[in-house]
Amino acid sequence: MTLVTDYLDKTAAKFPNKVAFANEKSAMTFGTLRKESRQIAAGLMEKNIFRRPVVIYLEKSPECVAAFMGAAYSGNFYTPLDIDMPKARIEKILATLQPEIIITDGEHYAAAQEFADNIPVAAYEDFQKLMIDEAAINTVTEKITDTDVLYVLFTSGSTGVPKGVIIPHRGVIAYTEWCAEEFALDENIVLGNQTPFYFSMSVLDIFQTLRNGCTTYIIPRILFSFPVKLLQFLSEKNINMIYWVPSALCIVANLKALGRVEVPSLKRILFAGEVMPTKQLNMWRKTFPDCLFADLYGPTETTDICAFYKVNRDLADNEPVPIGKACHNTGLLVLDEKGRLVEDGRVGELCVYGSTLAYGYYNNREKTAAAFVQNPLQDCYSETIYRTGDLVRYNEHGELMYVSRKDFQIKHMGHRIELGEIETAVSSIAGVERCACVYDDRRSKIVLFYTGTVEGHDISEQLKNMVPEYMLPNRKEKLDSMPINLNGKIDRVTLKNSLG
Image (cartoon, rainbow, N blue to C red):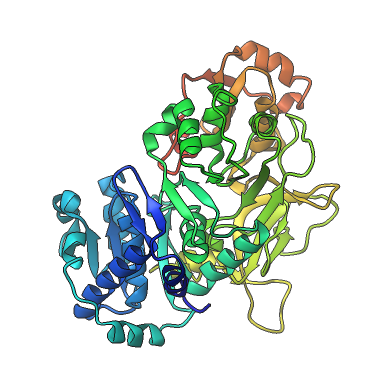
């Protein structure tokens, strides 16, 4: 397999009439998906766009995937923009990307024109009227290699300017092949998609569907506010695999929806994107004892995932979930600040190399040079590693354990503290649903935000038996609900900004 479009060619020939993707508005078979993808490719080729960025501004939908593949068939690369994304963020992305065209639909055409400036805007519906020159498209795809760029996904930047992560075809293919083999995925898989298409976790849902002939149901976002209805949706659609952020799983557990609806089809529950609280994981495992549970870890810069842990033993509520071991064709190094290997369970920065590594950040050589560096352990030839900024260590089982972000590590009262360690302890306390710690630099205080039924003084009393005194939060804020960002993860920026 050279290009991701090869997946669609093969699967559309094998399952032309099977539903590939569906949301509450439409469903699209593999045959139709391929046809509409190639119509978009034909339109882009008419405009002589080749090896250039194409922005997709559509609702999360089957049509969105067709637009992605249309960009790929024409030898271009795509960047998805969500219709709910703030205009200021969109404008920053467009300034960095300088795309050749924005593909949207009639419903969102006017909105796209508002921020497009001088960028041409094209309607999805207009592409559907085009004739497909199969020979011309095939000629173009013959010019593309697996090292050509497939997409650029934008992540948050520390300066407020989003960074565009550049991923080639080969990175997605390597990840997709590993995932299919590791989790035994085939055409019988029915996926329930939760994550936005501009978030790297969606890569699994999209490309497993294209590779295997799976069906992916795009779950309406509103259902994640009504967990019983969410479980009913999983049951009605016979969904047998989900890959969600922990916040989504925690909502279902915390609102006591587990067990209220039978979901006999569900067999695989994967999660990534943030730390999974073990207490809520155990609630899910108790409800679905026959399911495979797996913690997947990785930044967008490694296509999606570079390490994984299949939950194969009982974990105490206050015991963190491992991130496990490296995926196939991926190398993991734990390095100290001087670039030396860290051993004996000590903490170091996780660095990654291998087939799924990104090329760097689009139109940002400075950020690329800082994060994608020469392997300090290899001085005989060029080998790039990505510095994740995540601190990890090996446990007694030889499994990697996530400790915290480097910027979550603080110096408080003369002690070096990992805020993630405090969060793990608090999460295990009965009555705590979700929690997050931030550091108030101005006042030199550890601030704990949490939701649940327990009171702050009770948390303090129990924490005294779990962490040293210098790690006890100086301030506790009980919230009605935890702020969630567009990716579905705890919004730590909002929490930090609330400190004043």
